[in-house]
Length: 291
Ligand SMILES: NC(=O)c1ccc[n+]([C@@H]2O[C@H](COP(=O)([O-])OP(=O)(O)OC[C@H]3O[C@@H](n4cnc5c(N)ncnc54)[C@H](OP(=O)(O)O)[C@@H]3O)[C@@H](O)[C@H]2O)c1
Image 1 (cartoon, helix red, strand yellow):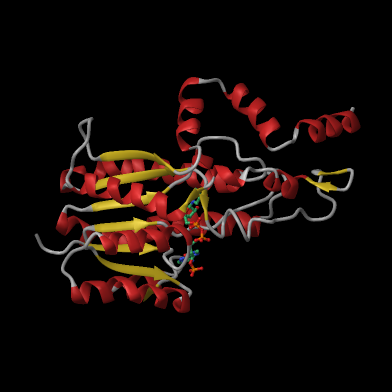
Image 2: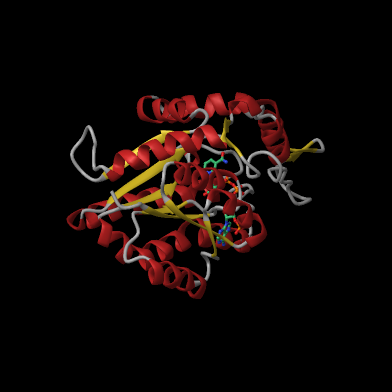
């Protein structure tokens, strides 16, 4: 068997970093792409090849593709993982924040897929996406992030239909909580002063994130093991159902989200999330003030 080749975007930290290592451990030749080259250098210990990549720039994406294509005539796995969080109440979020989140989490995923798909078609390989449970459920004060991941899901679904004649498989990872900088360190956003969601001095965006139980987050390495199992499975073209589109629920609480969204009414989800994010009393207070 020739050594399979993979490109992972957003590999400088968190999920992408862990997936790159897991793929390398299983014998893949891995290209790890991101903007922070210093972070990527650490992956050299695993014989992973760092590659400078800003997915929002066509020039950067084509540059990375040309480097990979100069050494390889195909790519077995394109793992579209890079992404950013987008926080802010649905009715207050700025144009700039909407554009940035959609640019990274959606437009750029399409750009990378388009530029690399000829290489993936040559190997009848796999195109994977790090989607999110946020694309299916309510994420309080994260509507734009949710929308970007829902858009990605819709794109992956039709992409799979269109690439099936070429033998290419598509995997959409509906990802639940994973312990990364996105969920642990940097996830301490706050609302601008004057927000309708600062109630009696409490910033509800901040407090709702603080109220999330950190034990519900999966370790990135555990998540990566499961994800790479799925990638290997998809590469072999195996599925219980016919077709080339695999939707895999991985990460903390992802199965719960699947059951909740597949079988229960939205009202139950709204009720549960009011309690989970401790928003019940503040929302009552907003209601009292509004009446
Ligand atoms: N953690 C979770 O609970 C969770 C849940 C569901 C989905 N996800 C998704 O998982 C993916 C990875 O996130 P993470 O949790 O591992 O967070 P993270 O540690 O912040 O990783 C984000 C990665 O995306 C890269 N990135 C951001 N903008 C980029 C750009 N313009 N060009 C290239 N790379 C870019 C970053 O690299 P540079 O800054 O070096 O470029 C970094 O490597 C994201 O798509 C996220 O939406 C995460």
